[in-house]
Amino acid sequence: MKFNELSKVSLLNAAFLFASSLVQAELPMVSPEEVGFDSDKLEAIIERADSVYEAGLIPNYVIALAKDGKMFFKASRGNRTIGTDSPVGLDTLYPLASMSKPIASSAIFHLIEQGKLSLNSELREFYPEFDSMLVAENGSLDAQFEEASRPITILDLLSHTGGIEYGASISGVGDVAELYDEIGLINGCLSAAENMELLAQLPLVAQPGEKWNYSVSTDILGAVIEKVAGMSLGEYAAANILEPIGITDSAWKHSDQRLSSKYATLYNPPLNGQVAIGQSGNEGINWRLSESDRYSACPVGSTQRIFDMGGSGLVGTATDYLAYATMIANQGEFNGTRVLSEESVKTQTTQQVPTAEVRGLGEVFGENLFGAGFGIAFSEENPDEVDYYYWGGSNNTGFAIDPLDGAVAVQMSSCYRCQQFMMVDIEQIMDDARIKTD
Image (cartoon, rainbow, N blue to C red):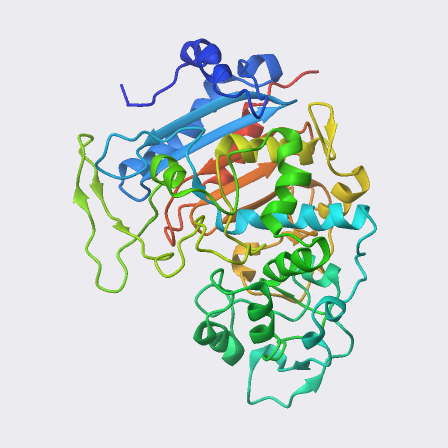
């Protein structure tokens, strides 16, 4: 029997054990059948995850599903650090990378509800250095620069349509993307003001509002929150989005003690001359991974970080993100506590980007669209019907929310550039496991 193989019976018997560990987020464990899912069919999730794990392509995984505020499936395998006895679980801290973006975007909508800014507020109101921006079309420094046709707005930043991009090391293209990497934008160990001053010196790569470019735009939103709220993004999100619904283990900054006892070590396929770990531990797995130095210069989750970047930097747990996703699925409310209005959630999960003109992650994005902080996947059978809302992180994490019945799924691992994203398959298995009623 595999280390984490769960039968229908064991799923039921695990309810009491898991419920006791979910006090803070208040996601009691129930059987899949209690919320309309087939236990046997859900085991395909474990088979899918184990196939990647046993091939040595990811160091660990935690997967959890919930509906109606109740967790109905959980599976995990592996250790926080390969070769040690440190099993991962619902409370393991993972570097969430771009899964920070939806939460940062929700914090912006909370500020909008408070009347502190609007979707049409201009970035230059908060950081004047973004006034009179120039545009290098498609990021080419050989092109004739144009003046920006209008100022960048908060909605542009939420929807990645402000003419900003990422460096070439992530998804950016053209000469401007190379400059992003040379300058090191965005840097959590520089202040918000320092980051904004550097970024504003670079030209845009498209006119504001005209093209979708995956970008550091959500990092800029973190700086806007800091300026408007008078506190960091992490502090504002904790006080107004996370803690009110019981999320207390996820944050942009953690103590060294907490990181040392809960953090999942980050790995990547061997890069720049690194050597794969190979055989380690007692499972007979040939690990095709090396320990990552991605955050060596500015450790993620540590108090060394000065700036809470909206686009990354959140270090959190599967349980916490499941609670956040459940709140979104329930139109801004979790266990009777409302943190966002239904209108805010609707805007976040409604298309804000034209179908055409998608650059940066275009092949990955496919036929999907983007809202204001969330990706929107459409049904293959009915292209006009939303299948699920989602996003993921470059460290092999992801989540999905099914608007059909509010079921949510979260998948965690700690593997940068491993390209082993499982959320599409997990969401499909969850769909297939839904018990049909006539």
